[in-house]
Amino acid sequence: MPDNRDAATPAGGAATVDAPRRKLFSTGVTGTLLRDRNFWPYLLGNLLSNTGTWFQVLGQSILVYRDTHSTVLLGVLGFSQYAAVFILAPVTGRVVDRFDRQKVILATQCTALTVSATLAVIAGTGHASAPLVIVFAGILGISNSFATPSMMAYAPSLVSREVISTALALNSVTFNIGRALGPVLAALVIDTLGPAWAFGVNSCSYVAMIVGVLSVRALTAHTPPTTRPRLSESIDLVRRNPKLAGLLCAILAMNMATDPPITLGPPFMNREFHHAATLSGILIGGFGVGAVVAAFTFAHRLVGTRRTVMIALGTTGLGLTGFAFAPSLPIALAALFVLGMGYLSANTAATSRLQLEVADEHRGRIMVLWSIAFLGARPIASVTDGTLADVLGLRFGAFALALPALGAAAVLFFRGNRKVALA
Image 1 (cartoon, rainbow, N blue to C red):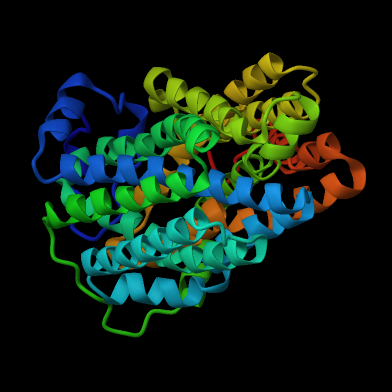
Image 2: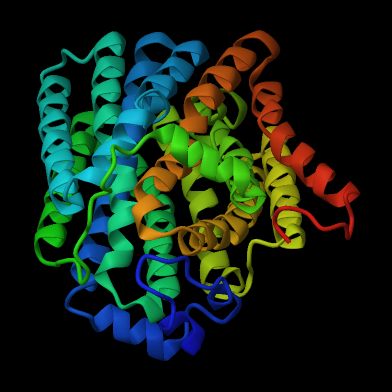
């Protein structure tokens, strides 16, 4: 458990970053949080919602691939789904900081529920064309661009400050458990029942998130900033703080490397590994299993230092390279397992440290920048690997997205023991 220096941190001030050095999954702290009536409903709702999201993602990809067999349009689908995170960043930051975060989350979940349920009906009646699916993905992307930073900023307010690191780590684990379970379950549902059922499952997962949010309340009142918040102010804050900039850049590079198994999963499974495209969720599941294993074994012992991030970036890049050139499905799954472990090791630590480094009045806007690094890289990555796969082939299209992570790891390596932003 964090020591008294965390407890003594003034409200709204940046917490000490010493906490992540200790074991985040301490049995006592974790057990207490998992029994906390003001936290576990939110955590469970988030887990179910994250799992359902992969039903939506895979269902959309399968419909577009069946309709067109185009890797370019798969890239366009990914761009449509995540472009709003980047485009609307100035607006979402203001909304998250100025309005009640619980109400923002509820509004976005209700919107997403409506969109997903509508697409389920359209797909079930056989009218879901590729252009229509891409449009619906864009609408969901707009909703998610407000939901993601709101959830990230809201979660710390549900627990006392001395256990915030463990709460953030558990919240991060729900993303990766969802990534491990969701794609595999979605693949089975889509292969046996069809994409419409996948959209229906995702609709139900939004209900779980709504119930979870309604079951908890913030322990500290959210105080909107007295002046109109500007994204440029947060960018200036990051520019003046090389540590924050370094953490965001690391998250950006690692998340770009996670795109190929998602965007190019159906054609990889179909063309390279000679299985039904509907089973492509197994690839994403292999990545998710690696991330979950890392989360429950060694990731909680790591912090966002230069050495940690360098190793994680290198492991991430090598894992994706192994997947790109894997001669068989078992080897591809092993490479994706490594990719998941490398990605999670520093991403959880970097995100937790980012949260602890910023004051509450800046957290919403900084989490928007986090959203850009975490999800906003996906539009660029999707279009890039989708287009390169069409021009150079699937394997080189996937390998191209390993280069940012490998390049960033090389930069940190050659800087050696010199004092750097993440030290």
